[in-house]
Length: 189
Image (cartoon, rainbow, N blue to C red; front, side, top):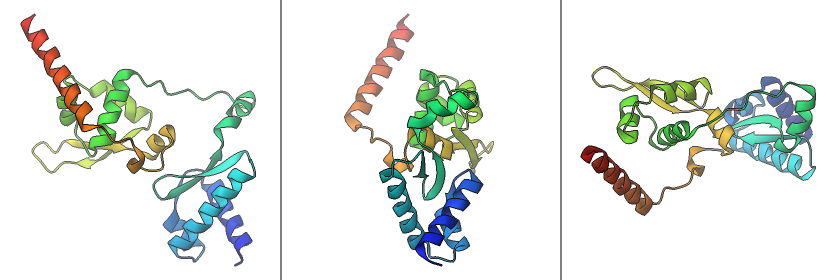
């Protein structure tokens, strides 16, 4: 199969599947090795970008998805009803950041870091499809483990968790000191 046919087949696969498809599966379907398939996918991504098209291919942790570019969203709204925008409160963002950086993590571990119950926040994040259950910890009570989803990557515009900002250790120590001061002040009251 020539390169144009391979690109057309990839486009058809991504369009039809709708969700992201692993590079390995695309390669297998086209009888290619994975590095070759990924190289072609990246060529297509560059081509879509340079031709200023309304669609793009995005990479999500070695999976690829065909989607509309954000700058054309307003035109879609005129035709379809606007989808409900996920409203992430400070509590949800705090809980989500703990899960993103500590995953796989249990509710108890999240609550220990936050200092308060997190049932509502975890349930909302699952409802928004930003986190999911990854399994159970091999410990007494077999607590659920949580981690982020592909929707999390898509929502925050990153290809993998490796692209998350690195937390400055000095800032972490500052935050710990502030939290300890707050706890001491509450205990005195």
